[in-house]
Amino acid sequence: MGRRFDLVIVGGGTAGWMCAAACAAKLDRSRFRIRLIESEEIGTVGVGEATLPQMKDFNDFLGLDEVEFMQATQASFKLGIEFVNWGREGDRYIHPFGTFGRPIGEADFFSYWVRAHHNGTAAPLSDYCFPIVAARQNHFMLPTGKADDVRNAFAYAYHLDAFLYARYLRRWAEERGIERVEGRIVDVERDTESGRVAAVTLQSDARIEGDMFVDCSGFRSLLLGQALGVELEEWTHWLPCDRAVAVPSVRSTDFTPYTRSTRRKAGWQWRIPLQHRTGNGYVYASQYISDDEAAAALLSSLDGEALAEPRVLRFTAGKRRYAWAQNVVGMGLAGGFLEPLESTSIYLVQMAIMHMLTLLPSGRTIDPALPNEFNRVMDVEYDRIRDFLILHYVANDPAAPLWQQVTAMDIPQSLTAKIERFRNRAYVEAYRDGLFGPPSWQAVFVGQGIMPAAADRLADAMPDAVLADRLGKLAQTIERGAATAPLHADFVARYCPAPLP
Ligand code: FAD
Image 1 (cartoon, rainbow, N blue to C red):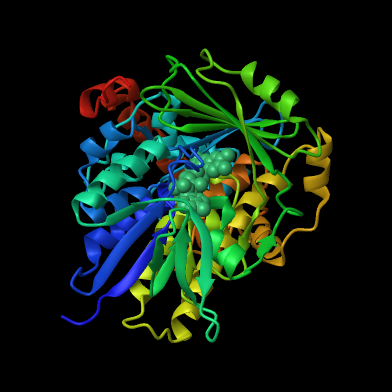
Image 2: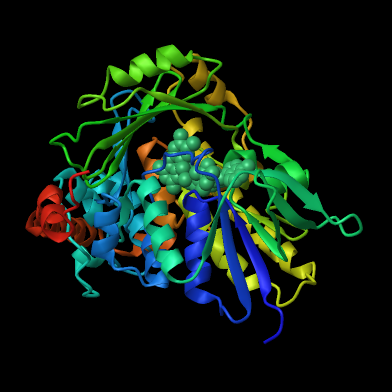
């Protein structure tokens, strides 16, 4: 057997153990030696509870059992995110993990809805979306798998304890031969000629060499940021929130199959129901509110008793200029961070892992084409999420200084063009790479009060009465379908009850 390729993962948070698990599942161990270094003394960021439907794909890719995974992570189901007070005070809308309507003619459903809306014959857009209607009833079911069933036109994600997920994946990966090294890294050694990272040294003086390193060291970005000096491209001028205060509370009776995001004076507040507790946090711009004030605002709005002291976390919106530099690939918080308004961080870890596995070099020499492609796709991922997040900020009543700032700011040209296309023709292009699909944009545009002047002209051909009749019947079918689903709390209690902690 020749020398194995030495892959060293630095950090054992959610990112590190997701990466280790994927490597354990898919890399041939006769060719790869895989080690993960983590420091219990430093610990992990310890927040992160809402995910996107792609997480199910990742778990399936590993071959995890859904019920076992949900029990191990105290997970519940997520059909989307409810936005409260976004747009205008008192407004509510849900960004669902599903499509609006179903094909009823030559144009896409959304264009028919826009037409009927202008005619005054449409119900609210949300009435044509199964996951929204089910969420409003606090109901949940798995998709039926039948192509023409409205109860199949959605995907689902999880609310979970990311710390428990990392612990679960650690056990899973260690059982499959991943070597875990406990210790604090105190030095990173670079090859003087090539500049590559050659080894890391632990406090114990142990020296660990690697051919390639995956930096999952969290906000410290030990290798990518500190050792290689890859700077953070900051997006704070578009996304000014730079702190969060988080606190868990006792599980409430309102066990929603969705995350709630409530707009507040200096940011927004999350509420995420898990089986053993509810996760809460206030994400805010520190220039407009103090930590104490934010913590007090959070504590006074919980729907259950607080289970711990509030914890403040600091961050900067942005991403490292290169996610892969030399022989280091950065992922998770080491690669960048965008506030959790659309639950995208764990998704970004997943994407980084999948692209890394696809582009992993076969020897020590790294053809620049590989990092170039990795950095291109990760840039696309980040840019698209960034624009989607900014959209939530720009369309609001400017009720407080933060909201005056973000509703008056210059936005990326890519987003301006997107808004204009939507306003003119209800048009949202679908992408090959990256989040989010047209239904997500439609939900947030309409939810925040950005309405199209007109839609696809193909939708004009259907007579008004036929359109009104089809829309009416569809809304009824969806309403009845959602009523057949059980309460989310009952479904979880039967399907994946987790042990009391
Ligand atoms: P960390 O958890 O910080 O792990 C870093 C690891 O590196 C640790 O194991 C640490 O011990 C190790 N390490 C660091 N330095 C050293 C050293 N010198 N020597 C040895 N080991 C070292 N994501 C979502 O998808 N959904 C959400 O709802 C969500 N909410 C969030 C809310 C907030 C306020 C924040 C800040 C983040 C949120 N995230 C969310 C992001 C999510 O928490 C992270 O993306 C995810 O947990 C990955 O973290 P990580 O593994 O990159 O870093």
